[in-house]
Length: 223
Image 1 (cartoon, one colour):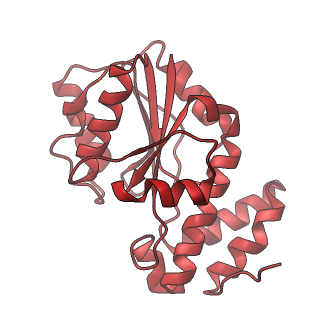
Image 2 (image 1 turned 45 degrees about the vertical axis):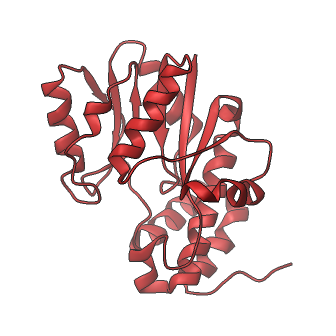
């Protein structure tokens, strides 16, 4: 059985996309987070029956469900930091019968179904699959067996995340394969990059006005 864990935060201004908020303001940054999340879920709709939306903070499950819709499976994130939350969510998935688990956030709206499918396929021959980002972290991580220790001692939110995760994997003697490099939409230049790439590739045009408007520090007009 496969399971896709999608980590989602409640989109409260000032608590999400704080680095982006320095450029566009907290309200527009929260709006961009909402847009990234909704676009990610729309793109990965073919995995919906295999997906669990993991919500932070834990008491926001009902509010996030009202935002993203009741036709999804939700569970709270548990743990004091991202490492503990990842360890708990992946271990829980394996305890419920999953054989391959892929976890990702919603900070990489360029992600495609092919990326996720490739991750699941790769886990048929390896222990860990990672999609690295340009800033030293990763946009996706998959496991073919539970390994909570993989997430211990990692300096989350720093350029050392990928290096420390790979070091943990070596200590644990886990086989690792890497996916294509990607990036998170954490700064204004990342939003602009995503807009430019989307326009160049001619995809998701209905979303572009929303991203462009909020990247300029404005909320989109309501129709």
